[in-house]
Length: 99
Image 1 (tube, rainbow, N blue to C red):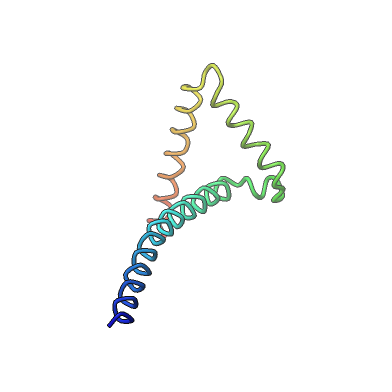
Image 2 (image 1 turned 120 degrees about the vertical axis):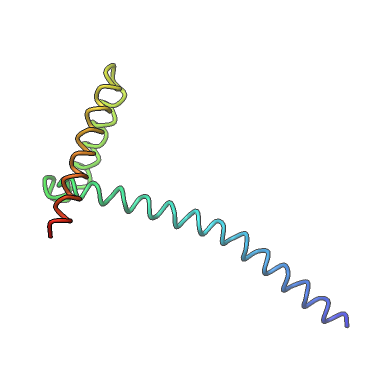
């Protein structure tokens, strides 16, 4: 009887550990998906081809963008980028529908 109780306790503890880790795994998957989508945007913008897939050049370009976004005219720069991005997404969607 004692062995059965111990086994039940171990099963319950194992289930609890799996449940806890699954929440962590879900968060990890969400973060991974988000990073993959961001990488897709870098690819879609043509930056990979423009830089010959040079990571240092890409990183430098992104640092420059971040610097501009922190500048005195940050709100104007961000608004401009947002408009351009929306137009590009709309053009891609229209191109996809036409095919």
